[in-house]
Amino acid sequence: MPVEFLRDDEAAAYGRYAGEPSQVDLERVFFLDDEDRALVDRRRGEHMKVGFALQLVTVRWLGTFLEDPLDVPSAVLDFVAVQLGVVDPSQVKRYIERTKTRFDHQWEIRRVYGLREFAEVETEFADWVAARSWTSGDGPKSIFADGMVWLRERRVLLPRVTTLARLVARMRDDTTRRLWGVLEGLLTRGQRYVLDQLLEVSAGSRISDLERWRKGPPPRGSGPTIIKALDQVSEIMGLGLAELGAEALVPPRRLGELAKYGMSADASQIRRHPDGRRLATLLATVRHLEAKSVDDTLELLDLVMATELVNKAQTASNKETLRKHPTLATASARLAVAVEALFESDSWGGPEEEPRVSQVWEAIEAIVSRAKLRTALVLVKENVPPADAAESDDWRAELLGRYSTVSGFVKLLPNVICFGANAEGAPVLEAMRALPDVLAYRSRLPAPLIPARLVEADVVNGPWKRLVFGHPAYEDGAVNRHAYTFCVLEQFWRHCVLLTCGWVSGKDGP
Image (cartoon, rainbow, N blue to C red; front, side, top):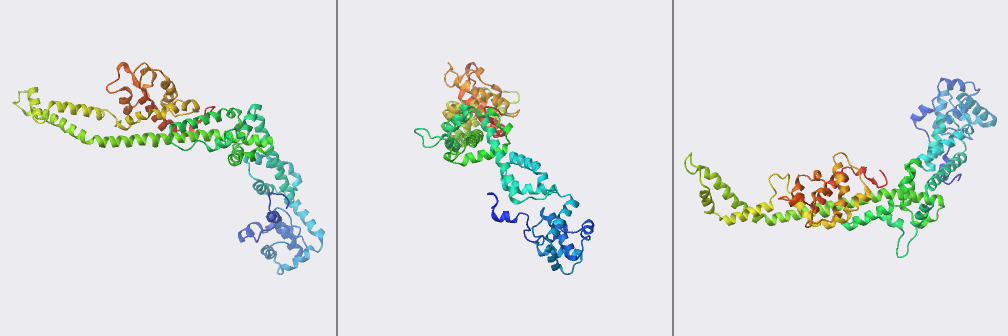
């Protein structure tokens, strides 16, 4: 076996016919044109002409000459013999009686067709292998196969399989070690120590920090879970690896290759690697975890907002609406009596005679008392949104009772993760960034009211205005802190996370 990445059968098939070529390949590659025929016809004897032609089409097909020039599929021999008008192809066996003849023919084919020896391009080929290995991270077998194509395209005769395979393996190993060295060289002494500590299991813990980071927070939709996720984001970002600029020095695919290994290998296995490989793997893995931890946090936010807050608030609101329906129906019927009496009063008396208010009240009270009417009016005003409301705020009102679920992580979210937004979401993003100060403000007003100067009034849209500013409006222009928090968070969730999540990045930079 020449080198470890080639199986025995693969090495044996190198520079050999792998079965009979198809008819299409025979006509495309093994056809002898006028130039070929002129060169072949210089030989004496049919066996010499067939033998020379076989060497010519073989090097064209395989990129190399065979030790036994007659070791070709019968279809190739027959196809060549027919072109040369040879009736008995078996006489080609006489071609190898004189060893020097086949070597002389090989040199003539090299000269006429401009074929070069591998030694002439070895340095150039080694540079190509190094560049390919550095940028792609492909395995040696893939580079080996493409290297054969590279040589064939440049009319270079393939070397021995061991020569080519060992060069590919050596250059790939060199570039991989150079990759490790570049990444290791970016780290400070403190960062190297911290990365190595990720592989250790601290006292009182069952797993290493690396394993804990790889697992991430439990996929539970709750405020405390998001806080844990944000703490992990801060912990990972705190290593400062984003500032090293590894992506500008190393192809992203190579970093991804190292990170993929680091995300799956056991800590004990990584610990056994030499310094260069170990630290390079840990650096790439942590850079991957920076993005993964942010994605995990946003998925938890989406889970909390969609399932624990909005959906549950809408469900509770619908249940409350159904519970109040009989009472609202009765109150609405009583108000309808009053409105109907007002319309009927237009027909009372003559054309020039206006009905008195007392007459209208007498007609109304004949059906429903004034006290019941007043109670119905209060009930409807409390439970039905104003006529100018864009949509019902019932489910939004239900959210206010869940303020404790979001108050903890809202203080951390904009400070731990750097978000981006399009023009539509920019005002909401600015309000979200200012929200921690709004929540931290110690107000002298009755809870949950705060001064209006603390909020961005422009982001409070139609459905939220009634809850944020009050209906009727709160005194001195105060606003409801809980309602404003949910107003900003709900729009932030929809615009800055769901619509532009591709713009989200770690706090250290986009």
